[in-house]
Each structure stands twice: as C-alpha cells, then as structure tokens.
Image (cartoon, rainbow, N blue to C red; front, side, top):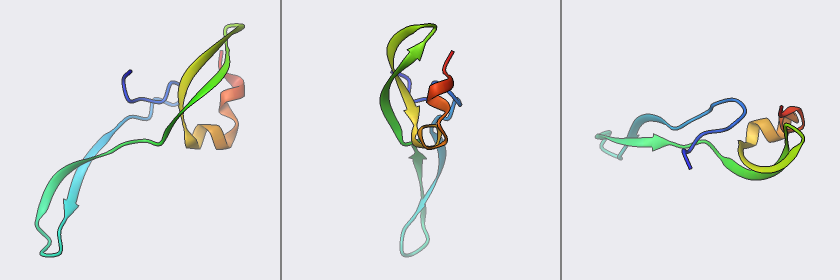
Length: 63
C-alpha cells in the first residue's frame, strides 16, 4: 500500500522536527488514512481515504 489517499491524492510531505534547542531533524508528516468500504464502479471495495475526504462525504462519490 502506498501511503496515499485514493480520492484526493494526499500523501506524506517532509519537514523538520525541532528540539528544545531549535536543532532541526528531518521527519515525515503522514495523512490520517482510514480504510473504508465504498462502491467503486459498482463493486464494493475497501480503499484508503483520508479523514478530510471522509468528513466531507467524498467517499460517496467514488467512481
């Protein structure tokens, strides 16, 4: 599984994590993916969808 939302294409982005002394180290910000069963081309299928798409109801419009 690629860590990516199947509706909006949201995927991990890189950035920095800062310590108390403000020293930067690399890290990944991952999207909040949930496994959801939806209809894809008339077939019930489990897909990974980010929480933003779930809240907005985009999972009902999967085609």
